[in-house]
Amino acid sequence: MAKDNTQTRVFNSEELRREVIKNNLHTVAKALDERGYNPVHQIAGYLISNDPAYISSHKGARSIIQQVDRDEIIEELVKSYLEK
Image (cartoon, rainbow, N blue to C red; front, side, top):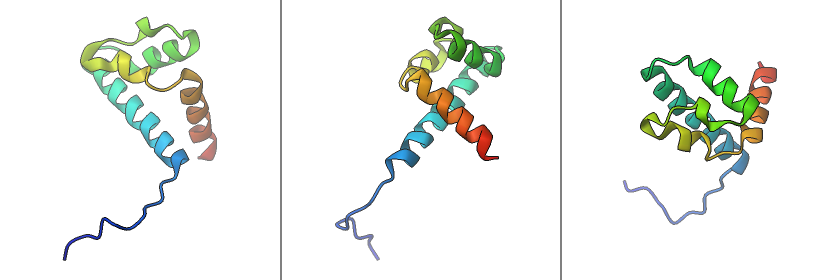
């Protein structure tokens, strides 16, 4: 039976934001790893300095990481770390 797409859907913007940040970080990490960089060191360098040169432009990684404000990424990482 076909899915009823006329029903109103409720989205949690906080969950969506968290998922975007997580996906972006994974994508960037994979691109950095492919180029032979240590993703943890490179992403940490970017987050500490706000210098996008820490992130390779390979597969658009630099653009991807800049899609979300650096402070939001740091906040999400701290939340994730403290929740465990």
